[in-house]
Image 1 (tube, protein in one colour):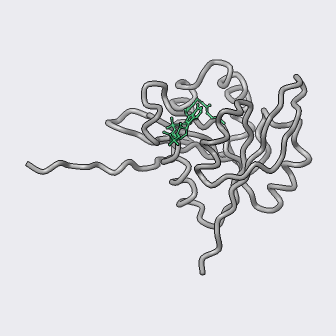
Image 2: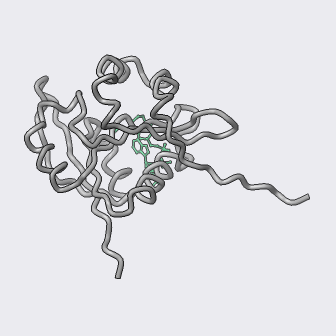
Image 3: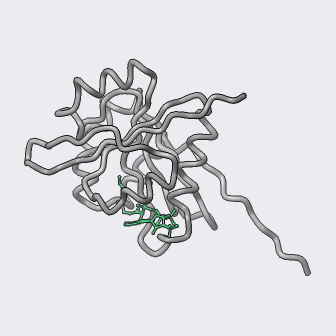
Length: 160
Ligand SMILES: CC(C)(COP(=O)(O)OP(=O)(O)OC[C@H]1O[C@@H](n2cnc3c(N)ncnc32)[C@H](O)[C@@H]1OP(=O)(O)O)[C@@H](O)C(=O)NCCC(=O)NCCS
């Protein structure tokens, strides 16, 4: 009997956003759930489902996300250049290290082939993960609570 390989697809869960939010750490939920009503018209939620279970996901913002308002001025410039912001990228703990995070990013790039993307990280150990996925460190910012955050951007290569 042959092995059946089911390709993992990206699903738009914007109308079922809370199914994804419920998987997130509580401190992440606190920064998005109360603002969701205001953000949902300019934000998409995409997830990867395996055996009917959401295993990974993240948000694509076309306006400054609520937890990045201290970066609003620079963010506006990026959005003007048609860069969309990626936030709340999350793989469920038992499924990490299976390239699902990388898969989510590559599916987003496929879905928006002409789109620049940017994101910000507090955990500097993620530098390798984002560089490996084609992102470049473009800025370092200090948040209102004196944390350093690194800003990364991805620009699609023009097709020759
Ligand atoms: C970060 C995250 C999305 C990565 O997803 P993943 O499916 O586990 O990652 P992948 O399997 O695609 O990892 C690819 C590479 O990134 C590295 N990497 C992944 N997560 C890492 C982490 N937390 N710290 C350091 N390196 C990490 C891996 O070592 C791997 O490198 P290698 O292929 O050279 O060995 C996932 O670990 C996660 O959800 N973490 C908690 C939430 C979080 O921090 N999200 C990012 C917010 S900006």
